[in-house]
Length: 266
Length: 305
Image (cartoon, rainbow over all chains, first blue to last red; front, side, top):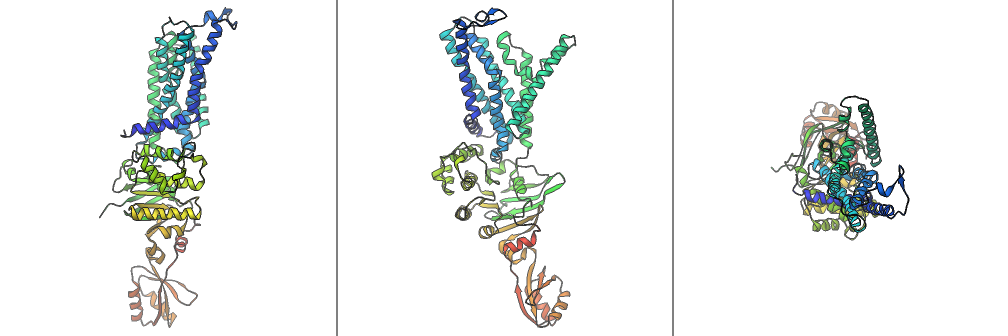
């Protein structure tokens, strides 16, 4: 590991936070709890008469500090933030390869895998920053506007787990970016991969429900299942998902590091 | 004897069946300003990329100041490869700071110094996206200079510069070589520039080094044998005598009636002595000099890059 690895990470942080994808990720992270709090306030004050299966939504929704933080995390992870993280990662790898700026760091006297690691860690800081920008306002508004008696430790663990699943997503996008030379290409590849993963899990779940032995067990080890590990804040965390997440992170980063070491830089 | 600044031995790189760099041997001594010439597609940039470790080599070794370690050796190298690329949304200074961070050598003062050397002190805090092509090229040179490397590897350093800018860069490189003792290895398509700047030149054709030497040696033809124009009272006697002299090859009859002869393994004085011994009345013996461009065109089959 180079002695100036810290400086490398700081340089990558400036790049990650300086790009539009990084700024939007932070902005979206901040906006989400505000929107969630406003909607929950509407439900609480019965400003809207929303119902689900005939039940008033205010009786179904968790109108507490736990609910604000938890729903904010769910909304965050629905589409916007994962997509922005993939975009930020793609820009840091595939984008830099295409613009030849990766070449300029590759001629520096550092092992190439450390460049990949610096990028991953900077992107993880972006993930952490966006999570904090979601968590802190949601806790603040939860304290000010909603019931504070419900325990929130599991939601907090959910946020922590989300950093792990974000890391898995970043590593997956890094791997794609190490092979594909366009930001759009990385996004398309990841979307196709996730759709394939979802379809595979659906087929296996169906097979499991039809009595095929082990089908449901295999589902738990799919990359998509690992990336959903944060959802345990609702009903309890599943250790197999975290095991799968660990394998996903180690495997994808290992292959990315190898690819970085061996790839020709134009 | 000190270690060569840059030493490539048997450098080879293939792209499929095509051999882009073919067992290339190069030796650049400390303090040299080495010009690397070759036509389009001759393998110059591929060779430079191999030397910098940007692309894998299929065979061969590269050592820089005696160090063959692929990562460590780059501590002593500043490089500019083709059109320099930058983060356009960052300032020039921030781009250099990024390079310093990854290099682990250099600081803010070093960045100021490099910007000053290339005449960009006043624009360092502007976004690179607002720079002209020439300014980007200067910034690329500044980036190669941060960290005070001992060896500069520059691929077409004056690309995109106007005549004044070209002269400034030339003067800068001359100054760096003379005052700071920097070793410079540069590829250029401007033969006149190489002639003005470089003390040694290598010409590459189809991935192979076809000639190497000082500019004087190359233009005098000494790198691949001396050439002389010979005149004699009796040209027929001269032609007959040359057949018997080993190492002297008649090339062509010149418009002025003299015979152009290539000498390999035999000096001009010895040739004259042998001709006199053969009874030839020599009335002219003129060493032939070429321009670098003529030498280049003679050694390479393709057009000048």
